[in-house]
Image 1: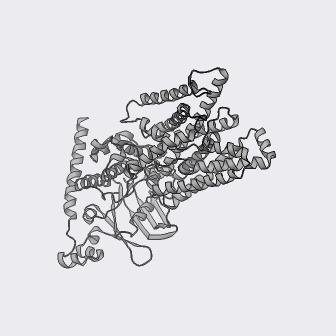
Image 2: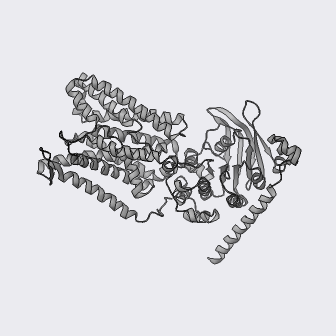
Image 3: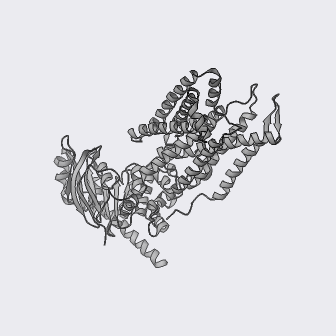
Length: 341
Length: 279
């Protein structure tokens, strides 16, 4: 029997409509706000060519934002920890190490990568997903060895793991030839590509839709998982298989997002909290709300960096999201365990 | 009518190392089993294992012939409801939504579903808290909601509760105890660890006492309440010579609690009769 009513959260439809209009607002803003070469602010949709580029940016930012939002939602449910997110636990660092290794492999022996790209296999996605999944496995192992009891210890472990993997990736990039080093380190700061590789887009879209359906189908079980391992088991939740599903889902989503836009920080942390604030705590609402909030944060950050005046183009998107999300994270941490746990 | 439970040389522990057991007992419908014992004697491990949510180190748990450790999750959820000692910190739902999870029961709903939630809210006096978000509840309130969730879930089955009275005030102890007593009289089985000797004496039809003796696993003794709470026996076992020598043993507060709880059970059934008469 599904739990049919959502009590005490009146106006569910209205809240959802508000969320959708926020999505529409940031997308329209991204499509019509730009900067001219001399630094002046331009308003207007531009010609077909410019409009196509802007739509490309909207699509890549939206896909990465949705993937990160869903990944954060899955991670917070899996670890029963509201501070969890792919960036904070080092999962995106693991994914970027995977991408770095793939691009080094491509430079060293180009033959097999050419075959793969001809077959339509997005190698950067494969590398990122493998890196993310391996990191997820390590984080999970750390959480379980501590009995999943101490949420701060898991977060701390994830942060250190992320720093470690990030340094490894940086070391590898340092050893690269200068021209590729520059492009990779720009990618590490987060980017929003305006020209998209079709296989990456298809893989990411598939990941978001599939994990969304999985979360929707298991929504009440995920709600019940929050009561704790033993109680959830006794409530009839197949805890082991549900955790496997959430873990793999979060890994694949983080990998896709990193392959698209680089390791953009804090989107996966902020999006589920924003969705919870707007739609309430039920998984069946959040599984739609968290990816939409991810779109709002990611596209919104892309708009913000157009608005920030600089002398050398737009600031990297990762800088914007880290500033907003980092402050939010510290604020939650400061409110104390009882407030956020 | 009612449920039967059997533990067959059940041993509980971690990583294959038993900390308590082995234990073999038959539990009949309508029994209230109080699990007592000093801190660290393995009460919680025993309860989690006999609830089928922690792997056993040996032995079996049968509820109406069904092996809990082999059963699928939904089948187990229908046979037995378990409440942990410490309420989870990770819940964002409201109190009512948490109790509705009991009606969900792994996707195999409870007959009567949502109307059971309303009844339990009344029984446990949660009317004013029902819409409150979980993080805003005190630990005692969370405990009451968690017990309410189990009361929604359990239909003529087994309730396993780890220290259900630990953070409740006196009044709420009586309210929760009366709700459990009512279930037991309807043929359910309750197994609960209770550190308060008075409450344990008031409620138990049988007592399992875990004794930590030496480095090995705790031994569990199956005792009658009269035996377990006999003043001299209790004082000797608790190892507090003061009670034995000066007070002649632990004061027998069980019967007083019992009267308070019976009164509450009576008022519950009166209000149910009234409701039935009205509708």
